[in-house]
Image (cartoon, rainbow, N blue to C red):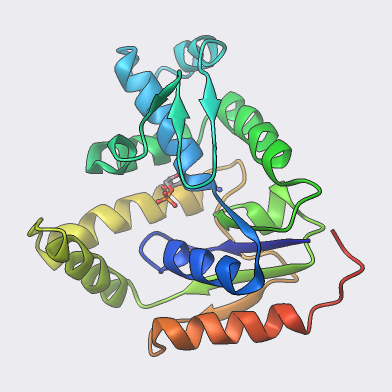
Length: 219
Ligand code: DC
C-alpha cells in the first residue's frame, strides 16, 4: 500500500512522513532527496543548471541508490551534502528538466511499487502514484513555515533570519508550483491538511487515522 504526502517546502513533510511510516510499520521514500542528489551530481560535474541538454547527457552517468534513510550518489553517501542551501535551490532547478523527472519517476516507482511505503514530495499523488490508496497534501502559512525552518536550523547551530528563509522558500515554491511538468499541486482525491495551527503530533494523528480508515483495495 502506498501513502503519498505532498506539499511545499518547510511544511513538515519529512518529520510527518517518518513518524507516520513508523506508526504504520511502513518504509518511507524521500523523493526530494532524489532531486537533490541529481542537482549535486550536476554541480560536482561542473554543469550549469540552466543547460538542460548537458544535464540530460550527464544523467546517463549518474548512479543513484536509496538504501533506507540514506542516499548514495555514484557509490558515495551524500545524505548530508544534499541538505546544503545551494543544493536545495539546485534541486528545484533540475526538477523542471523533463529528462530528470522521467529518470527519477522511474527510480521512485522502482523503489516503492509493491511495498508498504509513505512517499513524500511534490507530485507523488498526482504523477508518480496516481493510484495510491491514500493521498495527503500539507499546507501551512508561509511565514509559519519559515519560522519553523529557522528554529530547526538554529537548533543545529545555524543562525539564519526568518526573512532569509522566507525569501529562499518563496523562490523555490514559485518554481515548483509554476513549472509546466508535474507542478506542485494537490491530487483531486488528496486530503488537504492545514498544519498552521496544529502540533506535529496532531498532524501525525490526523494522517494515521485517515490511513487506517482508507480502502485497502488500492495500490
Ligand atoms: O522536498 P525537498 O525540499 O527535499 O525537495 C527539493 C526540491 O526537489 C524541491 O524544491 C522540488 C523538487 N522536488 C520535485 O520537483 N518533486 C518531488 N516529488 C520532490 C521534490
